[in-house]
Length: 399
Image (cartoon, rainbow, N blue to C red):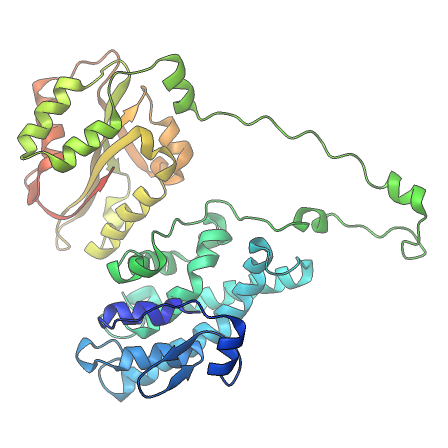
């Protein structure tokens, strides 16, 4: 609940010291006896929404609390929406996963359904909007996104979020802002819903006989079969590759060279001097649905989300993705990647979104890099203004 206040403070450049208070101190400061509380030179403010509003209102010039009374009212509405329609059901959903409360099947089902209802409302509102109120991040975005941080990290997996594309686009836009990252860090979206202790068993509970389960000790023992042996942990294919076919090429060293070289030319010279053609391969990436890219910020969010969801293979991969073209013509998402081995399959297994791209091998085992390929790789990895004769609207490096 402190996220929204601290993020608001980041946007308004307000210095807030986060202190560790014991329960007795909190009770002495807050009439409700609950955290968070904010101590100011004038007095103490309690309740998370009140603290967030106070910090957002401190500077009118930033627009964080809106421009005019209408926008301020709209921000209040979405702030209340976050507290009433998202925080409560979301907490019931993910608290058992976090170990804060026991799992209850009926409460879980209702909470998940209520979160879906809230996201449907959000998704409809965001269909034609970048932010919830106005044309910039406001406290409305901060409050709602803050309420969704833990659900998005722990329980809202890709299958659940499939109908809510506008929400995902907006949420990733928010949490990738520096002010959000300063408070919540990197938000890695949930791939598969985490389950709470007893959740799987709860789904399969059955009544224990006609008399309401008044079984004796023997019946209980018979009804509790021994758990199956834990499956052996399977090593990642890239780890196996490193053991069986070690490479002299150091991905970590290359990433440091790319970041720290005096010039791009020096970096590319170092790359080709150390490139292990038998242990690594280069791939060109082209989005299959570029015609759907209508807005620059949406395409930029798409490449940011793609790279975030590829985190599993970060140790063995490097890539640069670009949004090129214009909104008036066509916006294209393209990239060039360096991957361990001779296939894109491991990246696809780690990130389902990789299946939505066409991958063309440029160099690697059995395919020498030509001068044209070297020029193409350099263009993708080093160009800052123009690529393939088109303006670069956004570029992100996966390293």
